[in-house]
Image 1 (cartoon, rainbow, N blue to C red):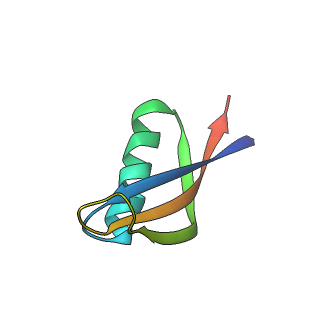
Image 2: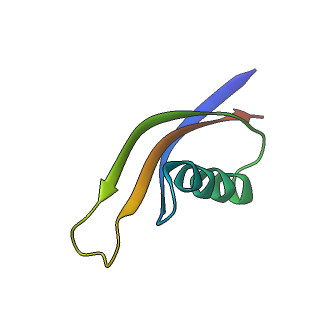
Image 3: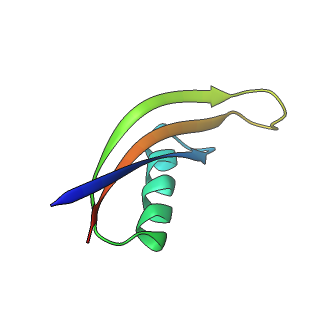
Length: 65
């Protein structure tokens, strides 16, 4: 088996977990054979937003056929 990894950053005004799931949901909608996810970084954007925005960077691995 061969896997490819991509980094995505999700955002949410609720939590880091919601931000991570936004990235995972998007990956599953656009990629086939998603196998695992690893959280890489977390942060909060404060500038240019009305309320704090949680951001979670994830590494998504999917199987290449």
